[in-house]
Length: 325
Ligand SMILES: NC(=O)c1ccc[n+]([C@@H]2O[C@H](COP(=O)([O-])OP(=O)(O)OC[C@H]3O[C@@H](n4cnc5c(N)ncnc54)[C@H](O)[C@@H]3O)[C@@H](O)[C@H]2O)c1
Image (tube, rainbow, N blue to C red):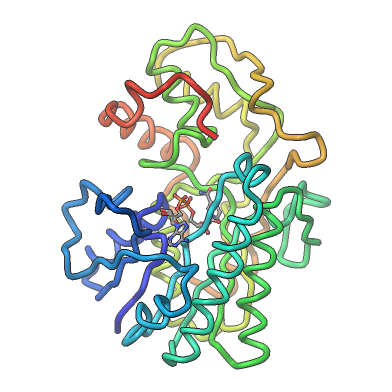
């Protein structure tokens, strides 16, 4: 059984790839082509070897057709995900997230894939119209990123309805943990404190999110492999607990033994109607279909994340002092 992970070089993909290898699964890891042979988040991984790796790009249909030969299972995590950049480069998001997903679906059909896991995001719901958010909550594209993910989920599902491609749309709420981009809220708080900032610059702090520790997410993805009940389904993945950004900052300060003022950085504000103010997951469908318990709560996950950034200072020291969109 060969498992293809697209976006293996990314934050979540790198954790999933390493965990699958540790559990002796046979994997093919797609790393986005670059001329330096850089493996992204897998660059220093002791688990991967040359034989697992393919460099390429999901925007190319012919490439995807070859990539998926002799593959049984696909986890599609390749995507452009930064919301601020999606305001500036909309067609890139459509090309990668929508056309890229369509290419993979075409290839999956051609190569008779057994399971196609399309990785969605809670951003597709927009600000909660009710909580907790179940899978029937309206979809509201409050950013081009969200719109592109709504489209990619629906393209994948249309291949299930139209051509019987065994698609499952898995919809994680926010993730955090080791190796996350410095742009994301938790790494930005940790690294500003670690660099000795006098004030922590943040965007809105009264927004709330349902945070999954990335190892839980990767374990969940492994748990669902081969689950027939998920075919044709869209399922949320979240803890059911929401935390405000302000409270996350306070928790991190406590772990890092400091008490620093928080300052509004206008640069980090999204346009008012684009700001997603509240996300909290109803995970009852997930719990009814999959036997899974999160291993981390927000406190234990934050502690592990802080420790990782403290042990890997090279990822954030000597970076330009700009907000990395
Ligand atoms: N990070 C989160 O909080 C979160 C939450 C919910 C859902 N998700 C979803 O999980 C998936 C992975 O997110 P992540 O946080 O690991 O993001 P990431 O940016 O770290 O990883 C995405 C990877 O996709 C690769 N990629 C981009 N364009 C590509 C292309 N054209 N061809 C091949 N590869 C390409 C990039 O190299 C990158 O490594 C995404 O689909 C995202 O929408 C993320």
